[in-house]
Length: 188
Length: 115
Image 1 (cartoon, rainbow over the protein chains, first blue to last red):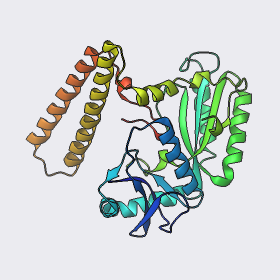
Image 2: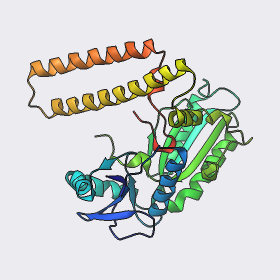
Image 3: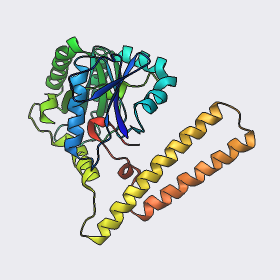
């Protein structure tokens, strides 16, 4: 049993402690399916592995717990989606995901009154990004932005500017993450 | 997590964002507990989460089949009624165990939501 961690456009071997199986021009990042319980440490280990890989090639993270019989089964499973995956890899190449959350400062997350400000902040941040995705959450804003690697600093400066302009909001920007929110194309 | 913070609030107070984190550790550490009542609720939550996940997957697959054509109107009608009934039953079960829809949607942090 193997676990499929990610799909990459570059099937060349890596120094990272995972196996990359070439499949139709793409590379399948696999490791033996881990035994034992899933805990926070295991998630962070997976995270740092993906980050190491995404520093050297375009990477699409695969849903946690995607297990297959063996590498051949994995190759077979993705074969029908090859073109779609190649296009998705093209979209995320050279970019990272940054997460931004906004809450009303000093008030319980989700308090009314700052919704419009949070929307405006989102619009400004989205203008700095290749793509953006909104997530549901208890905060006023929870969004992911696909940002060119070279533009990360500029993006963070914009977050800080927004924070100074709107002291009533608490902004939290984290990253860089693998493009978890951008593995699928625009709404089909 | 702190290593991943690129910009934070002026006062450095991350509390407004702290809520999802207990959610994550709850989701990961919700094992057998000494308190029988919470064991039952924890198990119910786990089972219902899995049932809900399956229900959503089935519904998606059904929608795909409907989109793809090849189903008679009667079959589509029956599928629709089945999923409505399932959805309602799910809601009843959740209520019975005092769980909200949100309780079933385990937050895996940067890995996203389970449902």
